[in-house]
Amino acid sequence: MRTIDLRGRELSPAGMLAAVPRATQARAEALDTAARIVDDVRERGEAALREQAERFDGVTEHAVRVPADHLITALEELAPEVRSALEEAIRRVRLASAAQVPATQVTHIGEGAVITQRWQPVHRVGVYIPGGKAVYPSSVVMNVVPAQVAGVQEIALASPPQSDQGGRIHPTILAAAALLGVTEVYAMGGAGAIGALAHGVPSLDLDPVDVVSGPGNNYVASAKRAVAGVVGTDSEAGATEILVVADAYADPRLIAADLVSQAEHDEQASAVLVTDAADLAEKVAAEVERIAAGTRHSERVAAALSGPQSAIVVVDDRDMATAFSNAYAPEHLELHLVDAEQAAAAFTSAGAVFVGDQTPVSLGDYMAGSNHVLPTGGQARYAPGLGSYTFLRPQQVISYDRAALAAVRAGVVALAETEVLPAHGEAIEARFTA
Figure 1: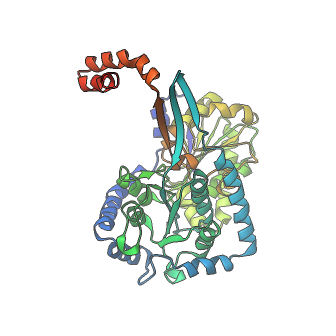
Figure 2 (figure 1 turned 60 degrees about the horizontal axis):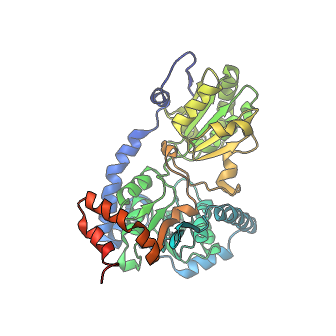
Figure 3 (figure 1 turned 90 degrees about the vertical axis):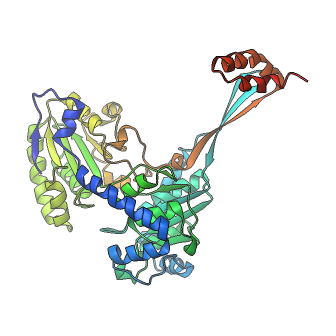
């Protein structure tokens, strides 16, 4: 990993971001391609999906809509220890997701004037589960459980067909879906799957969904942008990111292990350390080199760590480290600080914050109870991670009786006249004239 020394420099947020640029070129290139793929599926449906499966997944003549017996068999054959782990993850995510459903609030504006704020679940959701470089049954849990907790009635799941599975979705993905009671499953991947969920495919009895969620590569993230406005989407969760803020008391071995753990996802993954301890920076660099060389996906890790999106950044002090993190707005933020619990409040822009050296991102990926579908590319400045609220719509219910309406009668008429919308006022007056 390269080291960038920012000490002694006065940098704006834009200047800090320029020091460690994200891989924006890949996303820009993906946008146009993803839009074309989505349009192809919208226009040609199943035929387009099958051509895309052959081109991108090396699969032909597969069952795009997964038969029920595939799901049953996958669950029956799931290793007991994996099933146990998934069941515990489901329990934990269900607990945390329940806290994300707001209670109905009733506000009495005045006598006989009531506003009820309620949260309505969408009816139908499509969840996307990646299936490229790794297998993600944990993502099934992270997407399906919050939707179920929100009260969603219909959930359709899509994941790429696998050439080494005879064109079927990976059995562990199918087993996780079956464990959660999801029966509508489609073997389709990438941007095409997002387009199919958004627009529907009549020949597959796939009806359009109301919200699409789930992680994926740049093409999946770009496809979500292409269907935004047709359906709701969660944040564009692209290639993973980890930013670690550490002080001189941190353990370089643990920091390096966590940087490598996220770098193994993808060659475009971002791994960043920000510290005001130059000695720690050197030790982490050495540990990263050692750990990366011995890990199973060493080539992938090396590509991610040597890319411009990854770096060790040395800053003057804690304030500068905090400012850098908030400007960068990482997907995952780890705080390896001696006072991490107290310091956490100052770090306001991150998809999820992992406090202390015993709370690694890997925990959040699987068993913390938090959701691992999080905003990337700086979207954490304004967008949340996936949660039950992703599938809820706030809705206001207004109820006034005659006396309450009479109390604001003159005010409504006056404002309607001011805005030159007299019929608005006349609609009020109609209730008080014969």
